[in-house]
Amino acid sequence: MTIPAKAFQRWLHGIAPHTSTSDICRVSGIKRTTLAQQLVRGKVAEATVVSISRAYNVNPVSALAAFDAYSQLADADPPTRSELVSQISTPDLLRAVLARSAADPGGVPAAAAPAGSSALDPAPHATSVKNWVEAIDDGELRHRVSAATGIAPQNYSAQLTANRLAPELAFATSLAAGVGPASGLVATGLVTEAEAGWPPGARQSALDSLSEGELTTLAGDRLQTLGRALRRQEHDHEKTEKIWENLG
Image 1 (cartoon, rainbow, N blue to C red):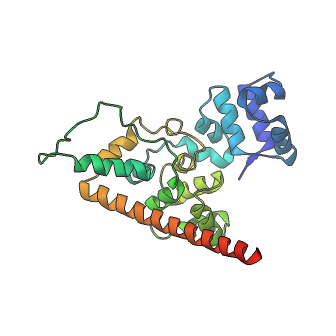
Image 2: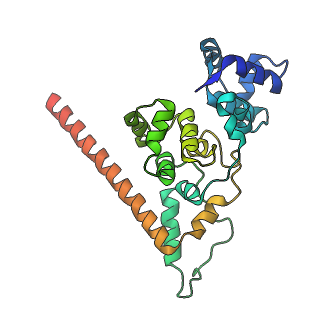
């Protein structure tokens, strides 16, 4: 679900009239050959729209909403708490567990850090896409996305395993789950939290709202997932070494 070239050119003329393609590419950091190839194919990538929008001080989400395929991005629904928590990295969760474990019996941190000194890592993080989908999945989400987009479930799962989703799939996933349509674009890193209209400090507030039990359970689940991924990597590495040994 890329952007039709004709619609893109109309939009581009609206934000940068009488500006040459060379100048647009220069200020946006896009290679001229890349943009030219997209225009020739008749399909412009969403990332191209985002880069040019930023260069001309246009909100990328609003820019994408100007195209028919992404018109529902105009509905700026706020993220749910589970979505916000899904965009908190595992190291940040572990730091929060340690900070709470240092609290005195009254629940007051033993050595409170100055405000702003422990800012969360920016989204996205190493497992942000997979975590986001799991946070909004009611058990049937993948089937609905497959039916809406035509992607095979196994191909969808493969993208999640690689912690990526094409913009159109991220958008379709948001719609299928009934959450804010820009949330998936944040999880994939196409746009920032601020560009999607997420309130400042929303992720930190969501983290603070977790009970100790919720936080510990979530951190434990993340560590188990990380452990499985590392074991798979180690197993694959061992297999590769054995292959080289047999060849050598």
